[in-house]
Image (cartoon, rainbow, N blue to C red):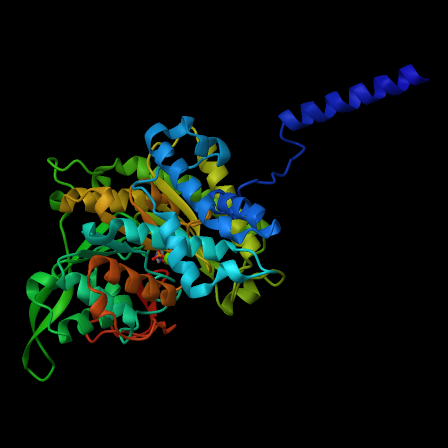
Length: 467
Ligand code: IMP
Ligand code: MG
């Protein structure tokens, strides 16, 4: 009897193995690092010891210790103690004066005085940001920004009347290059990007920036695929008046990806391979849309595919399902991981850089990513990573800003108002503390035209089309 039972168990296990190999039994994965930043979580745990022992005075020592570990990590990479404590710890481009940043932060927010609430994830994120800004200080030569949720709210347009626009103006005047490196890809059509940031260009011009200062402003669209530069053009208004306007004009790929430059050359990637990757992703994305009963729209561009809420008309097409107005976060993340898995398993293997991300309301596969975009800007402007800052909101593994970390020191903010605040620190550290003015930025969610030169009608920020 016992023998039969053992035999049955053995056969059952074998059967499951065989079915599994045949992919009949599907296993689900619990991803350990999903939606977490392991470095910050680890620091939070380290600080926890001081907190529970009621020894907040030792917070500072902990930050000094992390500083030492970072120095060692910068020297030894994967064999560093930090790599062991934080698996997958990436490149750190500069030393980080975390102790000094913590002390400044504590002076204002008095975390050491708290009895019940330990230092939070967000507080540590702010301290790391501050340390990064302190370290770059006067060396800053290029500051690049993500667009959605960093300079303006998701799907919104830039709001110029803020500390944020003032800070951008001061940095441009001081000789710093400013770039928006956004996933939003509207080809080389400057007027489409002007819908989102036209008000900023107008503000900068109205504030009297010179032609040279304005020309330090760039937009990199489609992650790394389309570079545009601010230029002052002479235009005739409807009333027949001749005016000068700050506009976005394309920079030819042959110029910013010239053979003499050491940066990446996305414009010259094999077109058939680009299309193959898009085909693979399209199939997966469409399968997910069907399986998850999503009421979404799908778009395929030259170098991207995406899906976003489909609007009321999709309700009749998918009577039982969701997503006409908003797609659940869980569904968006599921599609991201399905795409990642499918692309990793594609044969022949995909060697082109790409980016799959949950944009908050949508999911995208873009050819190229922000590490390519920022590295190309660094090569074009001849600026090394230790003189750069990249500011973005999506540094988890389902986001698209995380790629920039490979090539640039980064600042992790959660909304445009935080961008305004951190820029005040950037100005102070740069030696322009007296220029800090204005309230933290607010963002206006709007899909309407933002600049007089932009196309008329309602602009669809997902597709780049007017409707
Ligand atoms: P970012 O935060 O500035 O990088 O912009 C990301 C957002 O741009 C996405 O969440 C989309 O809403 C929008 N977007 C518009 N066109 C594209 C595209 O071609 N690829 C990826 N995102 C796009
Ligand atoms: Mg963003």
